[in-house]
Image (cartoon, rainbow, N blue to C red; front, side, top):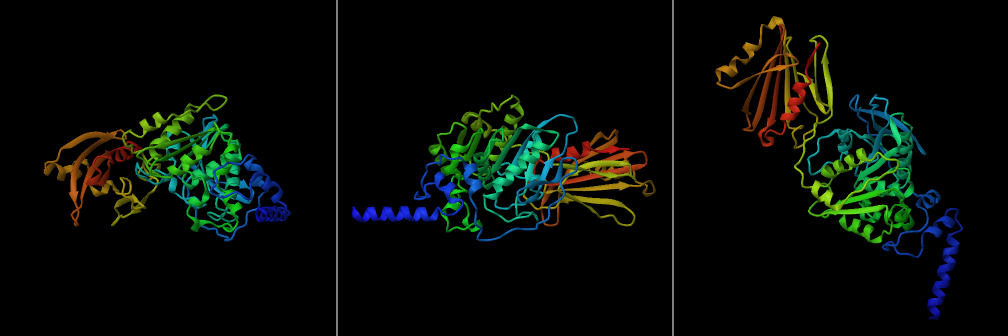
Length: 477
């Protein structure tokens, strides 16, 4: 007993000595310095108070200067938003130009990177849609912020500490936009992005609601090879672990995860929390990624319907389970317009398709294909666009003659108000791969235009809506 008393006295003296630092007097009020990191008791003091008083120590100063691609014109703008460390880059939905104020969600992508690239406009599969594109596809304005140290931004990676401040700064910028309703700004994220979003919900009540897909409760469950802070100081861990600050959440916060993902983390949050603002949902039979496509669409519809003075969003386990049963949906990608003033025509194609000039001997010929090699209908599609000038002596009848002679069924149609013909067939390349081929020719006065579209047979008819959208976009001056 005597030895135990001596040990307790020495521990108290040590704690008192440690609190001579400027920030310790605040932190030890909010954190039991003798508690184990595995404890599951949330702190009672404000996370914002403790976070602002804490001075993180970075063991590694890491950053990057990765270039930022230009966003699709008319859909998103590349902007700079002010933060505590300087101006940071972000993609923000363009002004709809209707004079109205619209809801916006700030979406934090997963992974450890602090930069942004053309990821929001990639073409994910239904069982792995990390882009957050369901929101802007539904009509919810969206902001994709980068953070300190990423994409040439000032500062360094702080591994979920200073990035929380950056999220708050992103909110302030979004609220300043004349076409955004400052009372209807939401926050969402996936994986590391969800953990960042949950920490931001613990820090501020500015967001109308928060949606987190696959957040962890304690940062030690993340990939510790990415940690830039002093891992010898356990208080650094606590400042980045949402489990200790659940009582600070004042915003409706919806945490979702598949049973095959970080569900044990989510169950720990649910078991620990006594906060009625936090709602947890585990989706049986799903994983860390498959919940995203169907359930971000649910969240988008909840946002659009949330029009009252205060948020009335409610979500049931049953409606999420039902949403998971829906048929996979293949949304159209972001499109950009190609215009040729000399030919007097234009059409749209996917933003992430490159248009290569393959013209020879004065002909006009382009190949359009994805700059990526993913296993999906957009990356596996190919379009040849050709224009025939009057001096080439090629008309609609001539270009369709081989198909007529081959016995193919020709479909009469119109494109851009002018007569056109369409034929469907299959082709096999030299390596034996078989492709579905749709060929469309349209005659405008003495000009002829052809669109030759290919998609690997494994994708069946799934690419047809993409090609139809391009054909339907054709206009003539």
